[in-house]
Length: 594
Image 1 (tube, rainbow, N blue to C red):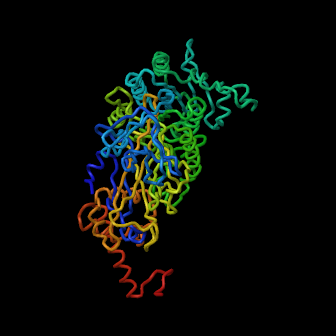
Image 2 (image 1 turned 90 degrees about the horizontal axis):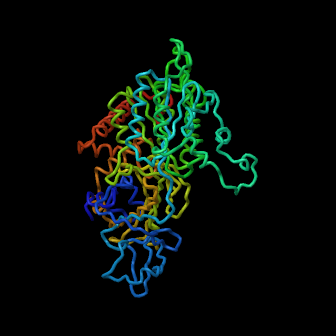
Image 3 (image 1 turned 45 degrees about the vertical axis):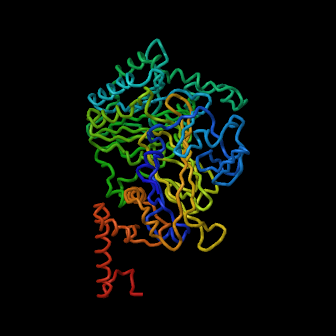
């Protein structure tokens, strides 16, 4: 069994169990779920980058050639370890031998990356959505940060600007003669088609619904609103310099009219029409809650307080806007994810900004969420610089429009993933019946990735007890392949392939499994489930709050986690008190001794 730290350094994967049980029954006795933490873009030393398309299995599984394939050097055939399909090597592999192996078959290269020879995507797009209802000092701080970004971003980066307050203004930075913008009402959300027509982003054929094969003019029209920094730096700086607080009058007993929901929807519609399935980020800068239009989270009158955690639990009158706001932002988040884009939220204010209702925008797309007391606070400034970081080659340290697919051996299936992902609805033999997190699929989309982005993947053993054809001998291996495709900051498409192998434990002896237990990774994996409120249906014993007492007590005895120790004590005291009441005959009205 390889050292867990070495595997993490070479593959970016950390499993809770590094030796797996051979049957489903034994897996249910492990209590801690069988899962892993996967960092798709972990920086790996000496990672090979191959400038050609990968060799893919022609059988039912789309697995990629890897070091665990069996090779017939004479016949130039490789056997897939997942579906056992025999595949011929392409002609340019004719010279391979045991002494002349391609990089894909070298045993130490279990993780490998391909620079796919495909057409380059457009440069990264940043669409800034700025709240103008903030006080002058805050608005000035946002202006300074955006002007700083123009210096930090590569000159080929495409940028655009939308401001909002009582109305939404989409600035046409490509207009040379003066500052020009399109204004939309903040009380009503225009549909994506209406907005595209009003901005001139749809052709006459598209408006009439005829000739769907006509070449779209959306990308040409985009040059009016979205331009490379090298072409629009002066115009955009001028707009930012002239940016002023929303002029709509506000009484001292009222909140300002802030149409955040309409502004975000308009930004998404603009990117949907101009840069679909390309690397793009909607960056929202807000200094207060939405008070008008779709996405409203609180009334305009200050006598109406913002909802609190207590109000959400009791469903008081102050929560009347919550369900509609959640529905609106969830619908917008699905549009963002479907287009392969990202949404970031920078909410800086002393009061609440309605981030709870907007959380789907970042959770589903893989965006960042930064909260601070002020845009002048160092928390925001340092976070903003980190978002715009570059790598050693001078490119943005981020990836776009990514997807992660999981392939497994026949005796193992994937239950789901937890993280900033959305389902790609891909059905395959690797999908388990049990769902954990985002399940019922073997592929997930992620709008953005960086070197620190991680997600939790969960698996279940499908072997049944007995000596059937699926029963595996001790010492056998299971295989998992993780395929991560993404758009690099340079516009090139890349595919990272990680192939893993784990051994079976003896059926009658689980001590071997226990020796492969990674306590740190297990705590993280279980923590993902606990934080997300996921019901662990693969576990055979439950205790309130949906946490096996055996596991909580185990962590408590090791003094590893204060939270686990507190939960273990709370569970023990709760059960002890219930037993004392049972013996005294003091039961709640809905309980009986039977």
